[in-house]
Every structure is written in C-alpha cells, then in structure tokens.
View 1 (cartoon, one colour):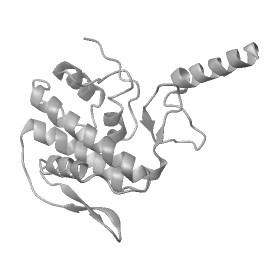
View 2 (cartoon, helix red, strand yellow):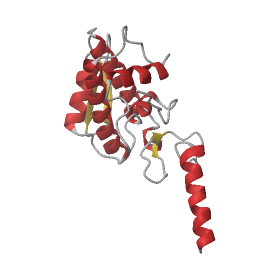
View 3 (cartoon, one colour):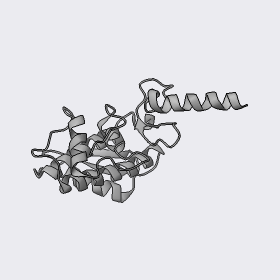
View 4 (cartoon, helix red, strand yellow):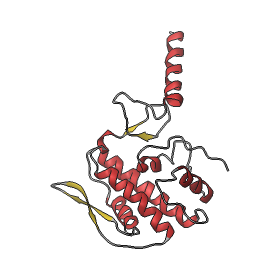
Length: 185
C-alpha cells in the first residue's frame, strides 16, 4: 500500500495530527505507520521489525487525545480530562516522562515522572512528549488550520501571512478557484 503523507516537517505533534486528513487515516495499518515512522527518521526511534497492531493502537490513541487537547488549548480552554488521561498514560511509557496537569491559576503544566520499555509504549511516549511540548509551549496559540477547501491539516506558520499547509497544493487550488470565480463574474 502506498501512502503519501501530505505534510511532514512541522512540529512532530502536528505531523502526528496531520496523519488524519479529511479523507482518511494514514496510519491505521501497521505498514502505513511503519512508513510514517520512516518519514520521521531522526525524530523518532525506529521500531525493530516494523510497527504492529499494538503500536498503531497506541499512536492513534495519542493522536486523538492530542487533537482534543489542542483544540481546547487553542481556544483558550481546559483540555478534556479524558485527553489528559490518555496523554499521561502514554507519557508514563517513557524512560523519563512528564505528566500534564491543569491548574486554575497557571493553566497547563508538565512535571517530570517515571519509566517503562515496551515498544508501543515507548513510541506513544515519544509522541505524547512532542504533544506535551506543543501544548505547553509558547507557540501553541499560533497553530493554524489550512484554509484550503476540505483540508484539515495543521501547521505552525514560519511567516505570519501563511494560510495553506502546502502553497503548491491547497494554495494553488484556492488561487485557481478565485481566478475562475472572477472570470465567471
């Protein structure tokens, strides 16, 4: 199965979230997750022998919790308790990990805690660590959703006027649509 990952090279947490574009789940199968991990080489430790169902389940759980938490934090709200529970459980699989907590006075914080080594738990922990970094970092409010029609990919803009995930794809479609709209009018 050939899978093209539409946006690689953003913050690792956003790369993870972008594995679920509008038209499906790009890491739902072990071989697809293995390909994504290869695309992320150097940022994630590879899994000997490739990913299996346990790794897929762990990564998908982290991704969905991250999506819910990020949506809440970007909107200035409190992340759902279930999302924090899933992320904290994943963080517990790291050799040394952080644990997320919500406090009324200071918002979302992350404190260091304890170890584990199962490959699925390790991978989930690495990804949850990246999510924690994004959620508690200063740029979380800058995360944008692509303005392309039917595109749900997220990115951190390097330039304040960036509007699309990939200018050559979503940006070109938007420009062509505007051109044809002007021609019809």
